[in-house]
Image (cartoon, rainbow, N blue to C red; front, side, top):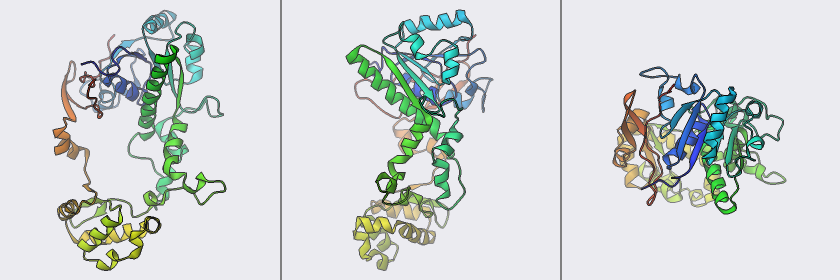
Amino acid sequence: MAGPLDGITVIDLSTVIAGPYASQMLGDFGARVIKIEPPGGDIMRAPGPARSPGMGAAFLNCNRNKESRILDLKDAGQRAELLDLLDGADVLLHNMRASAIGRLGLGYEALRGRFPRLVYCAIVGYGQDGPYRDRPAYDDVIQAEAGWAELYARTGGEPRYAPTIVADKTTGLHAVAAINAALLARSVSGAGQAVEVPMFEVMASFLAVEHLAGRTFRPPLGDSGYSRVLSAHRRPYRTRDGHVCVMPYTATHWRAFFTAAGREDWAADAALGSDSARAAMIGALYERLAGCLPAETTGHWLALLRRLDIPCAPVNSIEDLMEDEHLRAVGFFQEVEHPSEGAVVNARAPVRFSGTPCAPARPAPPLER
């Protein structure tokens, strides 16, 4: 059966991660994605590891289910080829700065007359009606500027970046949602529109959900920051032979854990029965957890906690995930044969549709001259 976006054609001018991650999802959902690359190819083709030049692992992991075509958009004749492709397209996606796309004559205002049904999605660093609109933006820059890095410092360390390109990928997810919303609107009105997805605002919005906290109110009821997740004791806990994730959440969880750990005095604490009181003392509760867990092994705690139905997990590596029994059962990692790279492993689209399944994984395209 065809995917939910079968019949939709996406022209993807984006590079690096945010745009390609978004267009890969659209391809997974059944859209035809034509990736337009400059003569040297997407810059993310270069970072290794790789079996051959231009086919690095990160590129393979965010460019499946796409076709590739080389066009030098600085050349008028090749820009005309792009316009021909847009005649049959539904979506144009790019992550160029407004000044750069404008110099090419490919801004929304330049195209909307010829392509009135086109959904034109621009992933940008900053909203184009603000003073930062012309600044370059990369994942680390946005993590710092949007407040992510500073939150780490509140847990007792130095400001730092997440060990994943979280701003790029979160922005890509927002782009997919926005493109699909615009396609739905077009199905009613018949008209396309411009869609702007700014990384800075996306990440500020993402963090504001819980961390706006007391600053949600006027006048403020307190500082920013969600205390539970900023506790210095919220982390994987050391056991006798490693680490374990434990997350008692309800009063029942806490009482069951402390009883099992031989701390009936803590289990009897009346404050555990009040959601607000428990929230106010969460740092102390996590500290108590940390003090209990070194007494036994990780395996002991996982077995006990699962028997008590308390949320818990091992602290897995990526290698552990590839052997995980649940991910094996749901067919999460899939081996496909790449025409130039041989056998490669992809993580399949994580969502599933009962009536319009995701497209089978076609490996990322080589750079064809």
